[in-house]
Length: 113
Image (cartoon, rainbow, N blue to C red; front, side, top):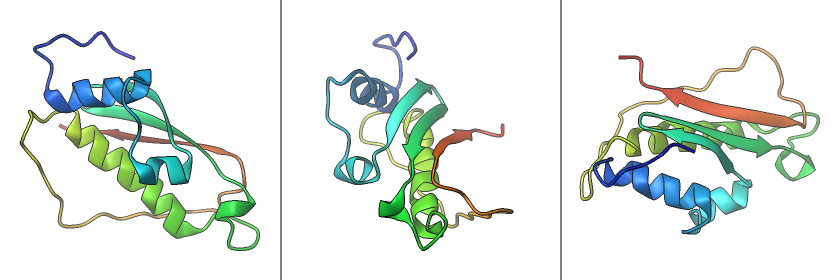
């Protein structure tokens, strides 16, 4: 967790409050069991532990992994926004070279600028 000042973007302060347990996470994050490991402006790391609940047989369902990636993308962008502002993207892509076994996964998004 970073030291957030009142000058920090409102989205970053919101993510910090969720990370610290001051505010509850969104319902979809609870459904997926996501936990914030680190949040700074423009960057966030979630912890996700898969299991049979998210299985499509022997691996984690790709749609679940896409949802985890979507959280990483959208909340990292959110950390840079002021209150009342929003951004949207017109496309996102998730690719996997090998199956994701049932164990922990970290999702990170960093601004490529």
